[in-house]
Amino acid sequence: MTRISDVLRVKGLGVSTIDPDALVRELLLVLAAHNIGAAVVVSGTDVVGIVTERDVVRGLHRVGPALLEQPSSSIMSTEVVTCLPEDDVVPVLRTMTERRFRHMPVLDDGTSGRMAGIVSIGDLVKARIGELEDEQAHLQSYLAAGP
Ligand code: AMP
Image (cartoon, rainbow, N blue to C red; front, side, top):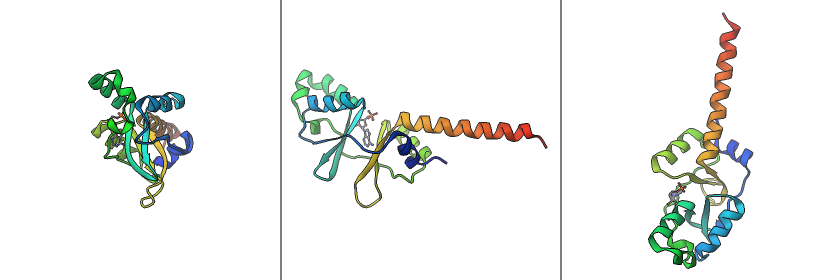
């Protein structure tokens, strides 16, 4: 079983955050500079939303180029779904697939509200493929050993 903490160990801890008042053009700078698709929107120590490249695309379609001068809060999603380091990769992957989003912030623990990192659907698919390959190799060597 691969846990979210195993994925974070490989990809690294930390999350790119942005202030709700930061303009969309500033958000683009953060996404481009870090080569990422999502930023967590934080006000003080509170997580107030998540904003991804998909929100920018939808916003541009709706508002046009004037979107770049609007605050990131105008396009963020406010009901942020999170996971925990001890969660198994498979149910988290299932939630992302069912709810149709590709990013999930990882809380440090259940109570503090601090974030340990963020995982993307790509990180989880990669981890799951590695896990299935290991299982297959194990089964093949077991069968090759014979009775
Ligand atoms: P994504 O596929 O991650 O680019 O996101 C698709 C939509 O889901 C966007 O509107 C995001 O703001 C939203 N979204 C992404 N991740 C989450 C999350 N963990 N919790 C809630 N909404 C999210």
